[in-house]
Amino acid sequence: MSRKDLFDAVRLFAPNHTFTQAMVKKTDELADLMGFPPDATAPINGLKNHTLKNPAAFFLKVREQFGALEQSQIDGFNVLLNAMKAWSVYDAAYGLATAWHETNASMQPVAEAYFLGPGAEAWRKKNLRYYPWYGRGYPQTTWEKNYQRADDKLGLGGKLMANPDLMLTPEVAAPTMVRGMEEGWFTGRKNSDFEPADYVGRRKIINGTDKASLIAGYARSFESALTAGGW
Image 1 (cartoon, rainbow, N blue to C red):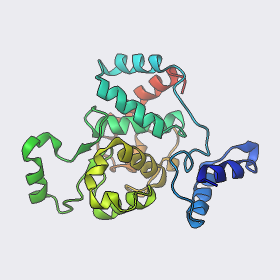
Image 2 (cartoon, rainbow, N blue to C red):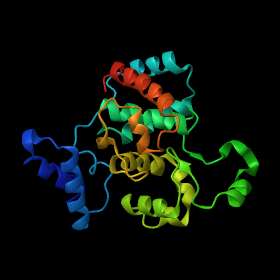
Image 3 (cartoon, rainbow, N blue to C red):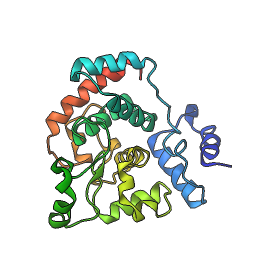
Image 4 (cartoon, rainbow, N blue to C red):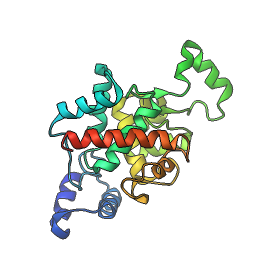
């Protein structure tokens, strides 16, 4: 029996066969206690799975709002949306806005101070007190304890701790952002702490109030695009 099977069984007893975020969290905790291995299709997907019913309309709207897109950006959107498929349009819009801002619109995981080029690693080693656990990924995961939590929660078996640059792969960075925003890994605040369209307040999930209004504007644009795409 897999973790997904457990979720499917529990769902039969949920009101209207639908999970709330709290039910998903409790079921996931039970699965952890019982020793079920992590399963990307199960912990957050007791909730309704969303997809873009019309991807072309989504990307058309994104281009209207932000300009031309490179294939690497499109790939990044698709990876993140797949990881966010249990999220509401509001959660997904803010997740995309966060990634857009934190990666400088590349929609690919980046390392802190990447813009310094070849000298970036030397600068990090000299200036960052949490080196080598500096910011990587979509929302810039920092500090050893947060890498350890991601390693544990994602069932990586020590691989991330042995090679923190795995946080620069979408396969690790995307679920880290999703689980982190759902569960409050980054600041203690999480998606469910905020009203759906409180995009200014949601910045506290990641980094206080830094650039909160700017990122809220991105989120509103992505909400419009997701709606156009039938999320």
